[in-house]
Image (cartoon, rainbow, N blue to C red):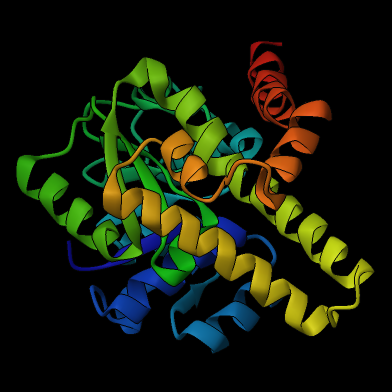
Length: 280
């Protein structure tokens, strides 16, 4: 892998580009990106140092490895444009495995929910080497989770290079194809749920007099520390909870209140809602 190209530069694409460049795994001048909103793309490029491009054709000419970072509902349209750009006659051929496109000969890393290996194999020829990865936004600060679908068509050396590229951004977990949906629901949507919890506990602190500028870091560091302790020790979360839950003490009263208001049930229900939506 010499040059990396992003199709789309939204929040997740920006998070990955930031992490890749800051880690030193790839130089900014070897990172290219195309997005329809050229003004926003150029603004992001100023901050990160990657090279903005004005067309998909130019991107595929520059990059040997492509990250599909646009919204899932936009991908069909992008693939059609890549076929049309290859077909100089402008015949508008359908996107099928028998139709050549500008992705042929490239390694394609898809980070769009639902677009796994099987989905691309229905659209693209075997000349495109594919890996589905589900990252999350904490990758921007090296604390993300990257779910790698266990099925892929990358060459062994390419797969090693891609894993190495993502490794500074957080934990890499390889999981079966049928678990990518639930895995992405927990790790991809999870940061928003944690942010909601940070906001709620900070509001509670403010209610009792803590300045808001102090409340947020106090809560965030508490959550960060508790998570790091669990990862470091491998202890069951219930055992760690019990360590700070003294008989008749303050913590058990807070735990009882959370149980009364269905805290754990609400967490599970949030994932149920996501999975039900995916089925619809």
